[in-house]
Image 1: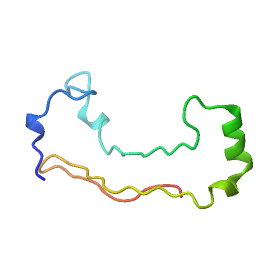
Image 2: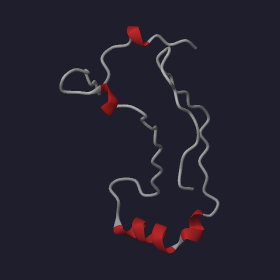
Image 3: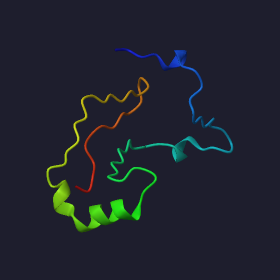
Image 4: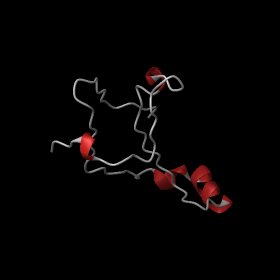
Amino acid sequence: GNPNPDTWGMPNAYFPFGKNCNPETVNNMYLILNIAFCNPPVTEECKDIVRMQPEAFKETYFLINYMKVFCRPNEQCLTGIYGSG
């Protein structure tokens, strides 16, 4: 599709640039998928299972069917795979 951000409402986080917010401060951001094995509330039992039985997660995988990142026209949009894994 061709989304038009000018038609969207106010985002949950809005940083108006100006004398107190330099636009160079908010750039080159990353979208991070935090995959946690223990959902809140995290129990010691769950942490122990993850820590002491890594073989239980040997066949674990995550299937992400679709993800699309939109950038404003004429702005650099970095894409790629980054990670420690």
